[in-house]
Every structure is written in C-alpha cells, then in structure tokens.
Image (cartoon, rainbow, N blue to C red; front, side, top):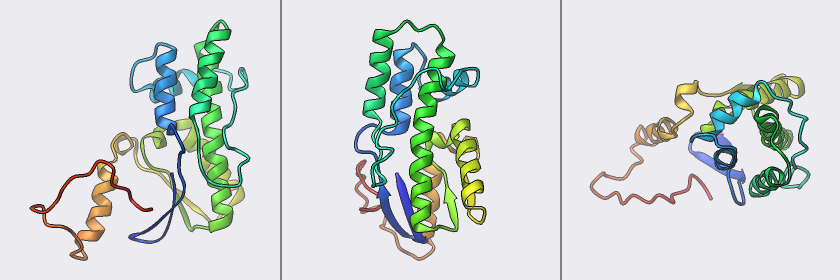
Length: 194
C-alpha cells in the first residue's frame, strides 16, 4: 500500500494491490524454485549474486496513472518462464525477479512523492526488509528529493506488523480514543483507512 499520512491518525490510502501483494508474490515464486518459506529473504539472498538483467520480467502497472499495484501477473510470468526455460542459474532468476518488484515499488513511490510532496517517506512492513528495495528507494529519494527524509524500521521489526500496530494504538490510547477490551470484537479484515 501507499498511504499518505497528513498528520498522526489521518490516513489516506492512495495505492494498494489489486491482487497479490509484493511479499505474497515473493513467497509464491520462491516456492516455484524450491526455496523454503518465507521466500522473500531466500530470493533476496540468492539475488545478491545474480544478474538482474538476465530475464526480462514484466513491471506490472508501472505506467498506469494510478498508484495501484498488481503482482499476480508477475508471479504468472515467473511460472511460465520456469515452464518454458531451463533454470541454469537460480541467482539470475531471483535477481531478475526481485528487480521487477523493486522497480515497480520504487517507481510508484517516487510518483506519489512528486504529487503529495511528503516531508518523510517511511518504508514499512515485511518487504521493507528487502535490501535491494531499501537501497534503491533511498538512492532514488536522495537523488530526486534531497529534502525528503526516508526511514525504515530495523530488520527485527520488519517481519511482524505488531510493532507498527502497537505504535498506531499508542497514539489513540494517549488521547483516550480506544474501545474497552471487554467490548472488542476482533476482525481480521479491519482496514487502516478506506
């Protein structure tokens, strides 16, 4: 997701996946090449020694005017490539696949930064642990927007969104804006914003 936060507690989703999320795509494609779960870190590790230009994977929705993402087609493209080609180098395959995801995530973020002109860009969630994504996004932000601050959590906080949810909850709790635990009904489909 791309979320614009004008002030604490005010969230506007400006872009989201229309199908598979980036992390889900990493995990599913990792399984196709026999890598264990979670697949993202496995692909990233192999990609470090691969050629990111070896395979021309698509960059889904890259040129669309919106900020939405779609990674199901990239997953399918990887599946068909594996079906139609002999896998000579897992490293090249992983580097090429990872680069496709990174290119889309970075391009959409840069595009949103041009329109919304944020003071800070925060890269968070599971995929924020991806070294290539961190390095590429930081490089592009510094190059194109030298006054924008970029932040991302320590790696130990990238694997579980509990820390991020706790921080959001903290800001509501200090304003006494919360529901009593006796009245809470958990809903796994709760959304941050509409």
